[in-house]
Length: 416
Image (cartoon, rainbow, N blue to C red):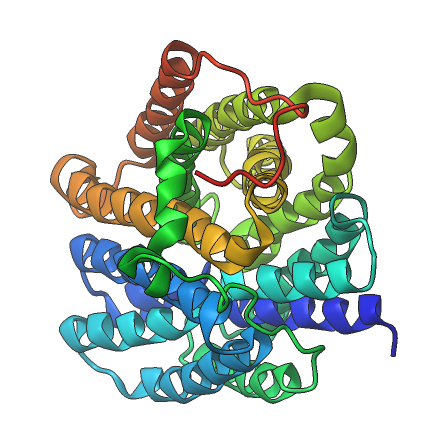
């Protein structure tokens, strides 16, 4: 089996685990358990809380003490055990703590999967920027396959979705120990206590360009969390309206939402070109405008005559996600010294899936519960327009604050 195939399997399984429940947990929550929106926002905040510290800690460990592929496998084995327990939970408070533990094990694997892939590809003499996106495409395909599996098997409101995710996590955990060795490259760094603890990667914030990059990573991470948390629930809610309840989009919302991931597979393949052509600054701005369009179209869409708006919104999502998240991870790989590879990716995940996810999930749950629930029903038009307004403000802040461009001719492997 070639290295490309081995890394392709890794990416496929990595995102199949997440796709098995991430977009359908809302249907399980509201259609099955009927717990509150505020509690639901708290559940989605668990990935943000875990990402505040776990990717950075895992990156430090992988850079200095433990092979990345072994640490990666251990996390997935622990995650499999926790996911297997989720269906036994019968109250929202316990669910919060169980999902937090699951996220503590899963969130660092996002950065570690990149670290393992980039390390193996670099050792094999491969061009990471050119050859990684086609491999990463299969992560998105894995996410789509999970969504279709859960939806077409009728598991969107069932606890069985967590058993599926648990089984795949177990398989990936065992598979990880067969991957190429990714030894810690930063263990030889000596000097100060900061270096000895592996915290030197945080000095990246002293570089103005990197600090601004991480700041907007946080804000765009919040936008991503909004669509993850509420998209599937939005379509399920049309089942309460007579004219929409029998439409395909309402009966199989995860299939419709999977168009977003199908779009991802296409836009991922454009990343090497758009980065070379436009640079990271313009690509980031395109991503922000795409988020405005994504939310705005959902505000006016419906499962019948307005279905085209929902589908177009899903297509735009691919651009919104890829043009920052995937391009961003490649940008970090090119800018950060390889001895800090795992730590740098951990910081990026901390800002997007940590602070960003916490901001997006917690505040959205509170705001929706307080301002956008009318007579027990969600005001989806107002919800999506408010999200679009948020994305527009982020784009405006970007134009005001992000003055110095990050061009491709900047020095590589930044050390500050």
